[in-house]
Image 1: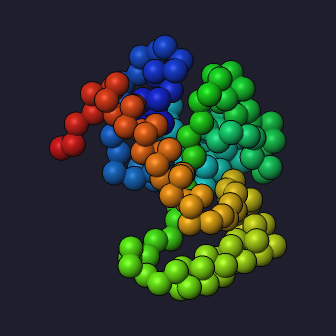
Image 2: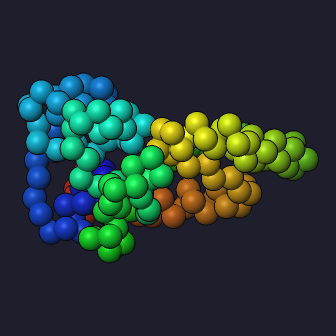
Length: 157
């Protein structure tokens, strides 16, 4: 999906080779079987640091603290941003008090210095928020990727 968005925004054509895992794709990249890869930074950061692959850019909105010389693609393709994110969900009918308590504790954990340092080491960020913030993120991401799926004519197999 990151590659399809890149193709659209950069006005280039690339052939997509599907892989079952980042590990297999990274192995082929290191071995010269493929020329480029869109990979989550935590999967590839050690390869970049070790010089086994050449990082060209990150897809996040800003450069990672652990690789400050690696540009963000948005610096040369305005508006291009792709970030992996994780969230925690509960059943729709969960009492509001339980949701508030869970949200408070999750945000506290994400604000912990050790958690933030570990995520930064892997090239990630710790971002908390409210359930409403998360609902907006999901809606925005659904709209963004729906457009990419339609434009690239991607079909479920």
